[in-house]
Length: 476
Image 1 (spheres, one colour):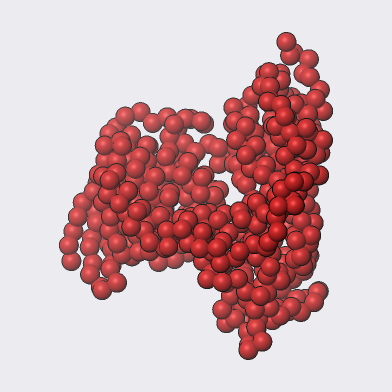
Image 2: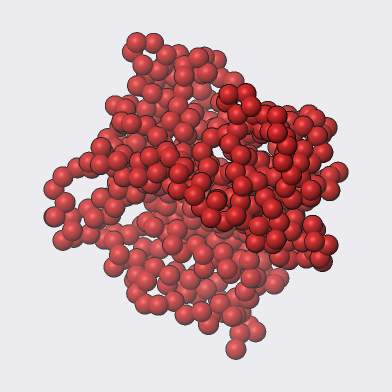
């Protein structure tokens, strides 16, 4: 057994852990990353990158078929093996050589093995061959171990060897048929991807699709999936799953029984905290880890939890945002310099609460930031909701024949600032950052009137939303 000391130990070398480490090194600290799988984490190999690589080709093909002139030139179907080969490139063929090289170039140390907290500021790393290294932190330990797919307690489900998001994004071929259990982001994205491959897809959701977003978002995705050939069963409970020679049979409590080649479970996430030594410091293994806005765990002056494990916002970009704040504040506290932890300060992740942007890469896409109308009212805001059909925007009609989409702006009437925006339509994800700036910056509507959208672009939707709201009286 060997022992090594660093200023900061980071458990988990995904994008969140990498960013915590990088910011702390830039702040003058010595840092070690501990990783037992691939450096680069879930996003690089089994989530963000490979899933979007799977979705994009069919999206492009559908778009080409929606423009006269291009439509006539499209004479073939999607080349699924080529799509999978392109996906392999985006996943670096599941090799982390490049990511590990970046870690070294950034001045960050790397310990490969399973890390467990074994005491205050102490992590023991065990390699597959049983070798142990005890790491000691002078200042802090940051837990950035992420989350894993939740497999719910449905009779027979675990024994049926279901796909999770990992198997769905790394599959070597498309099955002839697939049942998706779950109507959240992963479920609808993978249903869209595999429907595009020609797989016979059945999606089963115990409620509607994309709950928690504006209702019209889930309605639009439901309609689109059905148009793409998928069967979508809403308000339907899955009661039993079995696998035999014929495939996987999914029984429902109030709907049909479905038999397909594979089944994908996409019903949520669970924290990867079950075997990282939380019990050694009085926390509960397997639980989400609560933090303050600097990512510090209450009751500790040395323990941080960053990214999915704190359950604040299970999105890679939000985890990296938290990581930048956490790495900077760990360095600041280590050096004894002032900490800016007031809302919107450099050492806090204030946006996690009311300004989280998210794109669901279905076709149509769903892009949203901030509060929905329901959430805004529940938070006590005096709200006015403005809706606009995006097909009426000149830039959208030029982009695609028969462009269909919907936009909603949620306004705080008292302050006349935007609380939330949702766009549903082809490639609306590219509209989202403007909305995020409006929400985060609390830009007054009278000033937004002076942000002139270029013509003819889809961004003209901003002008239409403002016109529908009406010019504020104080505008000059």
